Image 1 (cartoon, rainbow, N blue to C red):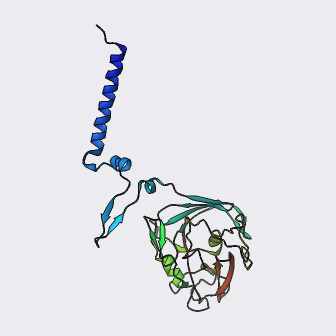
Image 2 (image 1 turned 180 degrees about the vertical axis):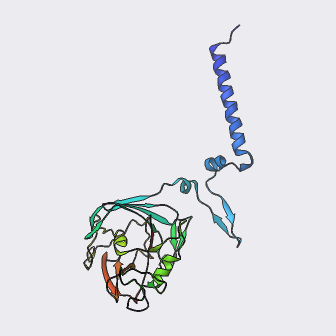
Image 3 (image 1 turned 90 degrees about the horizontal axis):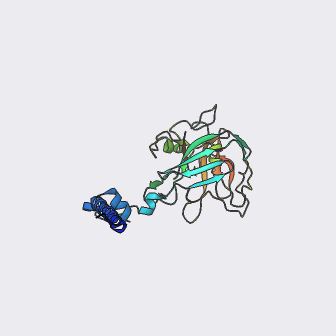
Length: 261
């Protein structure tokens, strides 16, 4: 006597259920399977050398996508390894002509350490360093007016930086650092050089804070570029107003490093 359709269906269900139970038992046995962790564990903890408990990344952090922000001059993408990828567009921005380019910026600034778990920088306020201890050409090449030796604390910081699997870091040039300017009231262009109005007297500006974090209580100050303007003056960018101008080299300012490609 042949089996009924209902009996055949019940057998199929039983077989599939048995296979499902078998797979689950294999994956969760000993609580050591990667699949078990992803499916059932949200956090784990471990002790560091001092005995304190440190929470590891949650499942949400594990699957979080890299965040990007786009401007007319290009797209910044947080690589979540302490670096920021920039894919630049060709065009004239901030009075400067740019070609298509690919750069990698350090997410954190001089004196800061990138923290993997929070994808943030510590301490909140970056250190400030000298372009040069003297207002002359002893720290930069006379022909190109670019930083080129360890007499400069700014040069040394980037030259010795190891981050994101890279060691070919250098101080960002004037035009490279200008790309990180984004006026809050007019994010479609960059102020031209020596325009002290910058983004406007009351217009606070900053880049997306998940890409380049602000310092302290929402502030970010002046940053050196790699370019000298004259023998005694170097270019810097003041992020409080968004302008690019020059000052004596023997001043302390923050630094952001860049790598290419």
